[in-house]
Length: 443
Image (tube, rainbow, N blue to C red; front, side, top):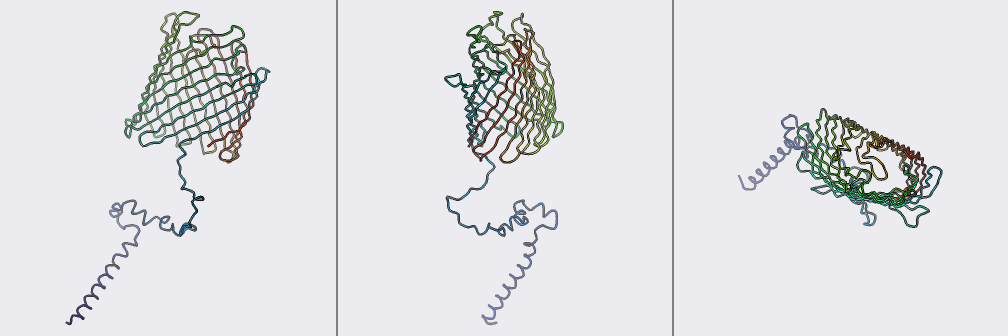
């Protein structure tokens, strides 16, 4: 066969072979799902998504997506992200009219606040700071009625273990005429607090174990009174060290039963003036309860237990109290949030209060409803009953509040609030009404 004829025959054979191979491979390329289960399991997830996902294969057919028009840099908008900015801050200015037992006064408040969040690869750290700077008509200088700075962090040690730590400092001082204060108090005391806590949680199958420890410091400033002059409250200054253990068992993915124990040691700086002894004491508490969570809609917990405060001084004896605790939260959607709870506290009596200790039961409820993008409504209520051990007297407090936030834009809102307070103590009953109006500028 001549060379040219041999070459043409070879070329025709190669073309026929290629066409046959292409025809055999075409069904495999067009088939989006293998026919047998073995082949299906062998296909990786990304490969199947690339072939079978119509949203990806038809993305180029969406109007305005392809081809993309050039956008000037000054009008370019970056992709949306679910992460918020690391630094969040706001400043509020409010005017409040306060009426206490028929006597009225006007108070101006400056309310700065900030939150910084660092979500790193190793740990998540949150820094919070806030202050309430108030000035009444009879004051020459403003008063820092509350201020605080806290830092907290958490880091996973492994897939089932998490460590956490926190530290905080704070200062509070009531204004004269605040609900619950004696009318004879001209200048309420400043209260300084500070402390830190560490903890670790670990999961063992269905068991959840938590350990924690902390140290706190409380210091009271002097009180200026119209009847007795300057009162020193240094005998109420104390250190508190605590340790706690919590063990829970996950009965179902929703319900958990738990037991919790806590030990706290209170050490005071000076002996009391009335008894001449140090009121140092050890608090012991033991609780058992149940907790539940249904998605992000419902969460609830309830516990009951017993607490004991044992004084080092034998003449002071020991105090025992029944401990109750409960909290429920309901958030059906992003517009509604309801919370309610009950708490029990066994603690020192505090400044300007007689007695060796305080047993306090507190109930509270809060509600928030976002009507639309520019209006949010708020309401709250709280009630407490305190027994001042060693005096045979009690304190009862009732508070009601309602408010609204009108949003002008993403950075500015108008805030209006009304609050009612009723305090019944051994020295009489105090009723307080306050109405406030202000504006808040946020990041």
